[in-house]
Amino acid sequence: MNTPTKPRIKSLDLLKGLVIVIMALDHVRDYFHYSSHFIDATDPQETNAALFFSRFITHFCAPIFSFLAGVSAWIVGRRLSKSQLSAFLVKRGIWLIFVELVIVNFAWYFNPAFKEIAFVVIWILGFSMITLAALIHLPAGAILAFSCLLIFGHNLLDGIQVDNKVLWGFLHHRGVIMTTEDHVIRVGYPIIPWIAVMSLGYWFGKFFDPAYDPASRKKWFNRIGLASLLLFLVIRGTNIYGDPNPWTVQDTPLQTIFSFLNIQKYPPSLSYLLVTLGGALLFLANFETVKGKMVEFFSVFGRVPFFFYIIHLYFIHLLGLVTAWVTGFGWEKMILDTLPFRDKDLEGFGYDLPMVYLIWFFVIAALYLLCKRFDKYKSAHKEKWWLSYF
Image 1: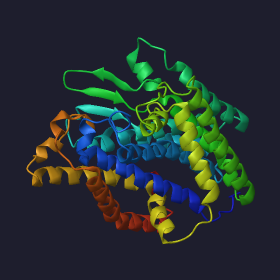
Image 2: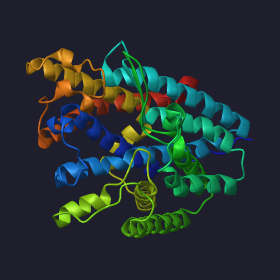
Image 3: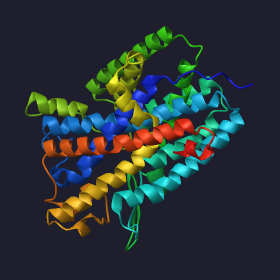
Image 4: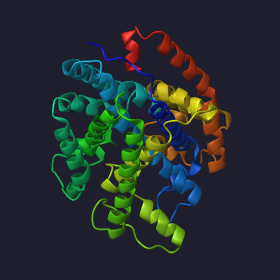
């Protein structure tokens, strides 16, 4: 029997839309901020408040997307059998890994030689879906235990060194795992603990059952979200566990705050996930009933996040290429061998941070109507199976 459908919970679309728009800011900064080539935005000794928090706010994007992908898998699974959901997750996961290695990598580099292959956020979403395809057959308590074990315990692996760089690079240690004379393979998003973030989202999916009381959902999300942030303050404050980069007292109070908030994303530390997922739960608890034009604006992106992700990378890189050509820097400098913020040939190219924000606004405005049209097409053609992969 098919489960009756109810209207989408708008806070999920709104949160997806907000975080993917914020993600676009980080990618615009990668291509257009001249400081990205020689200043670490999170280094307390190099950064400033505007730059630090422009980077810090983007920390919320990847974990929230992975978490909400797990929630979405639970929602999809309400109308499917476990075996059907597993098959869907495996196929979608394989598709996402292909997209990462071919479509996304070309968007980053515009280099048909594919001199660098980066396994980043889309790849780990795909691999996490494949893992989740197996995990969904476990009892709910086992899924929660697995998720918490990896999220809370994986920092115990920080000091481990393994001779097999490829294996350990994919499992837990970000970096270059293989080089040849002409090619580099880089892992930005290791498997542990990212797979646990999605499986945790799947466990939380039960709170979005149509029969679940919204008031209870709000209460529990507020409690868990606040507890996560308080636990972050305790764990980070003690400097004993939870992040491989301990904070230190700096020359100024603001720099000390930078150091305290400079938590590791690659792979995401316990501190990092407590902040980002705790913030996500507080948002979902308190923005479920909000309405208005801005809510609908961001929700458009949230209903077609994968579509936006692909086209915004190509659009930003193309803007960078045109800008390099128009300014006399040379369009060919945008045919990259490595990621833009690592390419020494791009030093001197770009603008200050206010101009980066203006370019970001332009990118979002330019892609809004295209996303809105695709959103309408998806809504009007639910019978087309292939749209579920976009």
